[in-house]
Image (tube, rainbow, N blue to C red):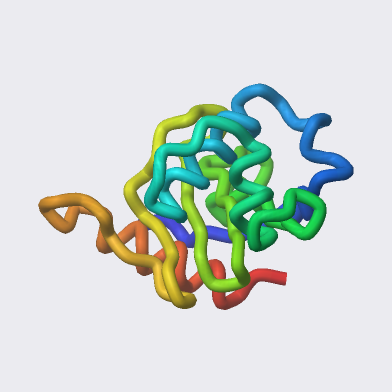
Length: 130
């Protein structure tokens, strides 16, 4: 597995989320469903759930993840919320990698364990992030 690095940290909140791309807004809605266990359909739902029901209290982080040997090319995009939870998407898409963090630990959500190496690389990169 490549050595990964978290870069380009952005805080996303009620004041700035509407400036994001449609793909990022869709990733937020998907993250709400993945993270909170109900069917959510909007970026607003993600911020509301991350803010204990109030969108104005919600704040999440968006990180780019790159291979350290090619740091100019974003491979994954990671949404971190509630400080210890995250969802990872293939960059520029709404395709979930099935590697997610819960309680500070990246876990493989595939049925066959095929993401174990990716999860280990994400964990190392997350622990080393700036």
